[in-house]
Length: 119
Image (cartoon, rainbow, N blue to C red):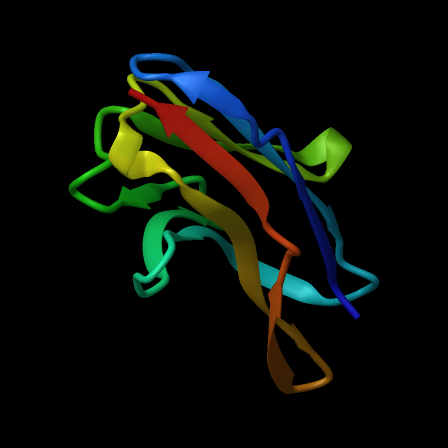
């Protein structure tokens, strides 16, 4: 199975920065795209950023220019750098992926990490 472990969530003031990490254990599975999503209390989970296998990225409009997704292949880790944080960024942040092995595809989620932005 694929294991995803997030870390880096914290309490930060408005305008501050955080870097979230997602340690990825593929266990032989193939992953084309890594995703970051978040869920605020009482709201639906929303997709924030995607990192494709070719290194290209895609972002939700509300975080474009403030958030950056990247990876370190040597460390098997995907990052979400978050700058200019706002109170509305407060949420639990998740990394996730669709992984395939022997023709079967499954979705895997990390446990989530809490980000709280104080005003």
